Length: 328
Ligand code: PMV
Image (cartoon, rainbow, N blue to C red; front, side):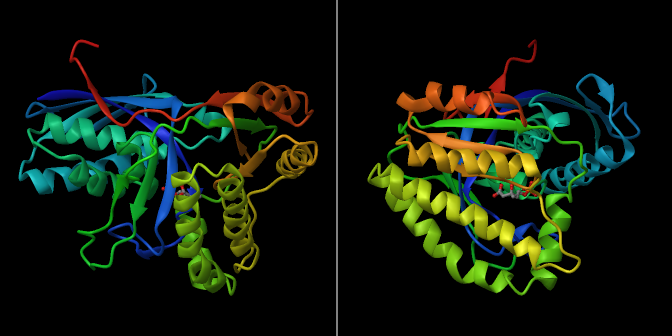
C-alpha cells in the first residue's frame, strides 16, 4: 500500500483570498494560476496496519508537531472517504526553497492527495483529487493540473462544485515567471490567518469581492487572445487589490517589505523602458515577475543586480501531478 506522487507549485494570477467555509476550504472567489516547472514536491505514502500513528518526514527529518497535525487531519479525511483505518508513513521532499518564504503548501498537499489516495487503494480522477487537495490547502487544488488553471469557487455548501480545471485552450503560451527572493527575515502572517482576519474585519474586502470575478474574466480573455499587456495589467492590479485588503484589517498587517517595494518599482521602470514585465505577490514579501520569454534574460539580469534581491529563479509553465515508480 505505497504510492509516490509529484506535484508542482503554482502562482496565482488572480488570487484566492478569503474562505466562505473554513472547514471545507471553500473560497469566496474563483482564482486562476500558472503551475510552475521549477518548484515541486515529491511525496511517498505508505499505509500499514503495523503502525499505531501517522509519521511525517519532511526533507528527511521528522516534522514538527504542528506540521504533523495538518498531515494527520488530511489523512483522516482520506481515510474517511476510503473507509479504511490504517496509519501511514508520509515521506515528503520539497524542491522549493521553503525556508526562503516560497510557499510549498500547494505542491505539498497536491502531491499528498495524489499519493495518499492511490496508496489507500482509491481510483481517483483529477476532479476528485482537486477537491481532496483543496482541503489541505486551497491553492493545492490548482496544482493537480499543469499550465493555466482555474479554480471555480462553486456554489454548493458541500463543496462538490469547488475544484480546479485547466482553462480549456491556449495551454501552450510559454510565458516566463521570475521568482525573486528578497532579503527577508520577518515572520509572515500565515495565509489562513490573514484571509480570516481580512474577511472578518477589513472594510476593503467588499471592494475585493465586488471586482475579482471581473478581473478573472479579463485574465481569461487575455490568455485566450494572447494579449500580454491585458493579462499583466489585470494581474498586477489584482495583486495590489488583494494586498490593500490587509491594510484595512483589524489589526492591520502587510506582507510587503521595503525590498518588495523596490522590486515592484523596478518592474514598473522596466515597462517605462519598453520591456513588458508585470509583478504579482502572494502572502509573503517575495515578488514574482511575469514577462515574455524573449525578454526573460534582460529582466533576470536587471532584477538580479538589485541589492535587496537575493536570488532570482527563472520558471515556466509546468506539468500537473504525476506518479513515480515505487522504487524512485
Ligand atoms: O492555499 P493557501 O492557504 O496557501 O492560500 C493561498 C493564498 C495566496 O497565495 C495569497 C493566493 C493564491 O491564490 O494562491
